[in-house]
Structure formats: structure tokens, C-alpha cells
Length: 285
Image (cartoon, rainbow, N blue to C red; front, side, top):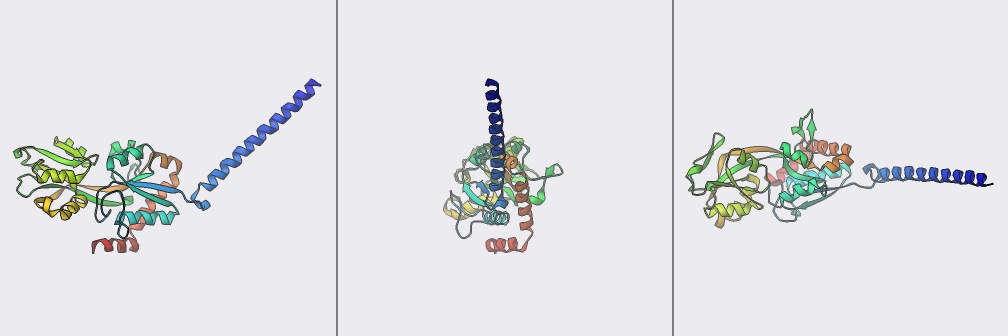
């Protein structure tokens, strides 16, 4: 009798285990279905950029995007998300925090990010045949030297000239931006600040020998504040010309590898089309 009860209990236990495993399989399949973009439930893509102006790619500064003309790059990503059926959310914060939160997986992507090997610890760039795929870039931009009009400091033949003549032979650069490491490899004394406007104001008062900054950013500040920054000029040629990408997080790549490739592919396709050209003309004409 006891043996029959033990056998019966074992049968029930096996049935319960089978039911449990069937439930787990069904639950996993349902999760995979409902979290896939094709199911009709959008995948949310959370992107961040820094809080400095970058006209015409990212218009205006601060924590918010301009409503009517947010910038070419903003419209580029909105189009990409629409094409792929993704729900897009974008936020603005200091660049150093963008990189920190991307590495931690709190963001799905950050932009505009130029490629540096050390940034591969932070996020992922589009690659092809073992190299960064330039065809899937978002845009190009350049860093220039900004100096006082009365200053002898210049940029010539790939190096700074007359820097040693300055009372403080220091070049300012925005905190965490790729140009910082470029300058340090030249053995330049660099002062970093979170906001480029701080560096330009220091330069205007003679506190720096120059500022290395993206022209899309520094030019905006100089135009906006001619009374403060009117004695500053941009020196040609550029210090460095860089290609910029949407950098995605390692966590997003692990969870959505196919969608990640489609994101970069869609950016490349859109940039060669007529719609992108018409959008660009609204900002540059």
C-alpha cells in the first residue's frame, strides 16, 4: 500500500514538473514574441547627446531639443526609428555623463561619438571586415584652434606654433571629448572643462593660450555673444577632422544584435537619399 502511494506521488510529481516546464517554455515564447518589434509592441531606443549646441546637426544647447528645427542629426535618428518601428527617446546631458551611463547600460546609445579604440570598453561602433565602417557614420566634423585675434599662437603643419611665448601655454578642451587625448599625445598642457563656453570665456580674458573645440559648437557661442567673445577667432586649417557615429551600448548589442545592425544600415541608407538632402537644406540654405 505504501509503495502504491509512493508510486502515485512520483507520478503526480513528474506531471507537475512537466507542467511547470511547459509553462516556462510558453512564457519564454510569449516574452520573445511581445518584445520583438515585429509583434507590434515597439522597442524603445533611448539615446543621449551632450548639452552643447552643434549647429546645424544639433541645434541649441541645454537639456531640451528645439521643437521646429532640432537639428539634422536629430531628424536623422527620428527617421531611422520610424523606418524600423522603434519608439525613440532622446535626452541631453554633459558628455562625460553620456559615456558613463552608456557603459553602465542606462542608455542604449550616445551621439555624436568619434571612434577611439579605448571607447570600445564603453560601447560599440559599426564594424565591417574588422574595421570601423565609415559608410555607416552619422556625420563629419572638425576641431579647430580658437585664439585671441592679437595672439601669435597658431596651428601649422600639424603642430602648435608660438605656444611657448604665452604666459600660460595651456590649451583648453571640453571635458571627455576626443581631442583631449590627441592634445596630450602632443605633450600639450590641457585644461578640461565640462562646458565649452567656460573655456571660451577664459580665453577671452587671457587665461588660456587657446581652445581646441568643434567648430559646430564654438562658432555658435561666438556668434551668440559677440560682446564677450568678439576678440576670438578660428584658426585654419583644422587641428583634426573626425567621423562621428551613433555608439550603442554593449547591453543593447547583446540583447538586440540584428536590430543594432539595422539601425546603422538605415542611417547609411537614409543619408544617401533625397529626403536627407531636403532636410539638410532647411538648415544650411
